[in-house]
Length: 158
Figure 1 (cartoon, rainbow, N blue to C red):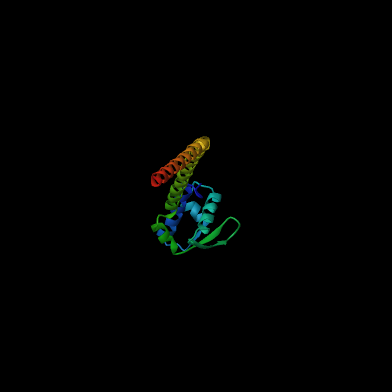
Figure 2: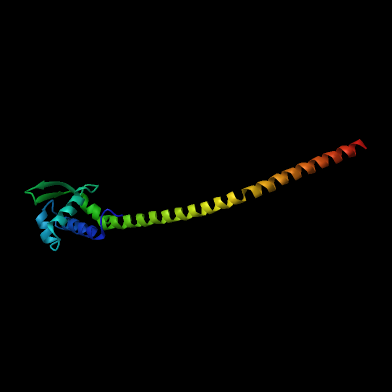
């Protein structure tokens, strides 16, 4: 399951573009809500900033609380590089692709296990038949060798 949703990835990219285009090195949480995401609650904006804060490489240096509901965000120089590499939308797409690959791999492993179980059951059911034929072939080969040795001894004695 992706760690962020597509909508969150889009909103995070909007926030980073806003920082990058305005060359802002500090921003207020209320400004983000007012200028970028006016239709969303302040708690949602806080959760997006928390995602930014936990991002590696660091996209925001620090949060400095002004009061309980408001804080100032200090940005880093990594934002433009991060956006050039596709930003959060690219990370989301990569996670979705990796998740589908893992799901396909699990499906194939389960199918392989089913075939392995069927094959094991077939081998178990036919084990004694093949053992009997192998043993009878071995006895027949020994009998033929003994017959050939006896003929050779009889032929040399004459």
